[in-house]
Image (tube, rainbow, N blue to C red; front, top):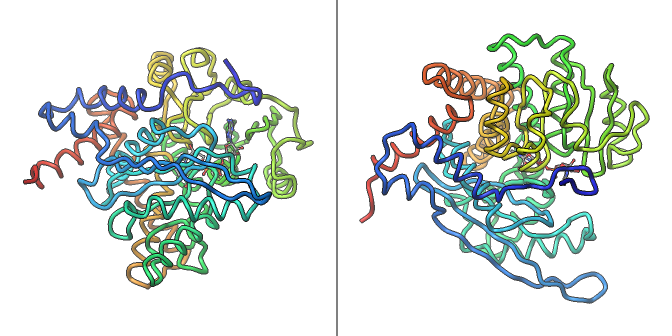
Length: 423
Ligand code: NAD
């Protein structure tokens, strides 16, 4: 089934998919049953229903969540999503993914996630601010610069982070920039944070190409989703010498078999705020984009896009997951059988949380780095993580996803053994 945007509707509950992935990887580790059960369970969950006064004077009630999956390794870290399809199970799944993502790149964080079921495009700026400030007030008991640090995700941006930071600071009575990352630079954000996830996606694409022998020069690439992650990934991948043949957003996509003019496309999206209407290619749906003949497919929209139905028709040789959870476990198995290499989300899109970590460190030290320093450290950490995961995949003869999850779950489990069970 596809939505009217041509995007496949998620077929599997995201939490069920996250647990299935966890189980597959955990089977490779000799964890005690009780430890395995604890790691598969969210540590804390808060659901809030709250009112917002709209511009026309009416009052609407919204539902939001904040979930801490694991605080074994350190404070919890994870984005806040504003999207109409947000559910507690989606937030749980994304929180668990954050635990594995932080562990696989070696950050001293556990995983968390938050979200509000809302279409932010349907709100005025004033309504968005009121919703953000009220949601922040509701989840205040859970967030803290040393306890749980939110960041941007789908539908949120640096301005939303600024409102979260300000609301938290007003409630505490002093400025607390380090309670969120992904802030504007003027209030303690980090150089390079906005571009970090897309930049990391391009670094892992490059490393996968090198390691597994796919030439980059002239390789064809299709990117689904043209928001923060997708637009930066597209620009960075074009710089590697690849030919970007298709991109899309919620309104559909554009395709040109000989390549899109990425500079003109970005200028068009800046102006029109959508990919739709770009004249440099033919209009296609999101479903068509996924099935195009190309070397690299880079999903950067939402979870559940490559599913059992369309996996047999994916023609890319490599899938690099910019989005979180874009491939369901059933689709993953089909791609593996068909020899399609999948660079998993927890590695491919970890650049965002890596530079969020840099932002948090800079904020706590009140000492800020140059963009070159940020990018050099990002490059180093992403290359190390990719290399370590590829080595595990090689040694255990498993997929990159299984290798990344095995490494991540093992790290968290070891930390848990060292800390012990309280009391
Ligand atoms: P964004 O809101 O900036 O962009 C989302 C993009 O997806 C937009 O182009 C939007 O039009 C498109 N989209 C939304 N709904 C869609 C639908 N139903 N079908 C097709 N396209 C749709 O979000 P983002 O920050 O770029 O996040 C994209 C993905 O990357 C998400 O899975 C997110 O969890 C993941 N991610 C983001 C970050 C980050 O730093 N922002 C970090 C790691 C992972």
